[in-house]
Image (cartoon, rainbow, N blue to C red; front, side, top):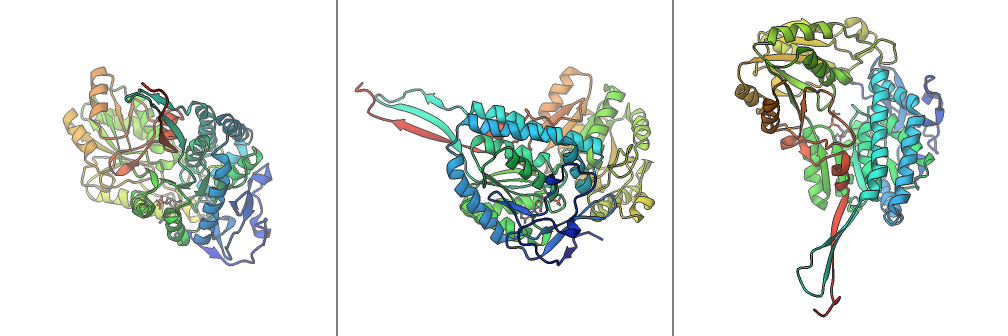
Length: 517
Ligand code: ADP
């Protein structure tokens, strides 16, 4: 069963809480839990007359009912973003920097509640959720500082009597569509640079995880961000195409930034052609993780566990294909299996859980299909291998962390992204063979290699056709670095100064009649 249930309830007129929408007891600062969209500085149901359920994937319970906003609300949000932008675009970088720093500080202040909200709606262990909050916070902090470095250029004079300049200006209102796997960080990584650049935004968070997005709106308001600069639409899966179309076709939105699956990214890119919008796309991956004979086994296992099992394997930079050279294959497989067997599936709010649930039943079924396909074609299960029946019978969406040996290129994990906690191990003989397998995908997001040979680390890093490379490291994301992919993994970069450029236009100004010579 995929949980997408809608419930018809009486519509409260002002978007205030109603009885079935009680704030979870674990949340201390109750005002962070909002159950309506946010447009032009108001929490509102917009044009919605029906509601959709948000579930806790650890037990299937309904944690909130949100208004099913639609295309009309996307248009209202576009207008609100556009109107508010007329003032915001003329603010000084110092003014914008101050608001962003306040937003960053409030995220730190509310870290525990924000982490609890992430765990309740996305399932990840609380320790990981706390880490996500501070990762998300780092983008507000970084872009509060980066805002002050939006420089222009005075260009060399190639014609007498003129002065030529290039200035940087905000692109304009931006539509932001985000996924459920990092409910907070995927938003701040876009909102931070957008606000710093002087853009306004309308966020369409994933239907599975809208509660973190709404809490971020509360924080923006508390920090003094003017009404209309940050808007948020609560949209059920049945309305995403309408809302997506409205966002892509609206001439008021000048930019669309999307993180999600490759098919949806391609569709959005086509729709954005109607208004020739600036786009940034961060799409699927199919990351190779290569362990060479000269690698340190413990370092490699730690790097793989960080890359593969964080968020139960539900990250776009998660290692999908583990290529191990024949000389260390058995030693690596044994050390990895021991580490993975010790992992503990459970509700993210329960002490000791190191692997939370997957996002829904469809995700569990997909991971199960990958394991079955490998086993049917000759792979051996070294750890895990199935869904834990007890937890899933109680309403959960878990899959036991799994390691499989003797995996080959014909098996499903080598063909598509698994997005789950399984590590398939392939054996290779030479560096050329590893590179051929690693690059044999239309995706190009993250890649990893483990070696102690300096020359090899350069050579292989340069030959990997991916936007990011981790060398002896599995946790590569950081606020200051360029995150993004090549090939069908996307367009553009997020993070650091690269992420800011995505929200800026360069304008050339030619001033004539300055001198007679
Ligand atoms: P996943 O399968 O992991 O949910 P998606 O790419 O379907 O990945 O979803 C990522 C985000 O894109 C979510 O916010 C989802 O609601 C949104 N989305 C999916 N389809 C569309 C669409 N046609 N238009 C706009 N947003 C969409």
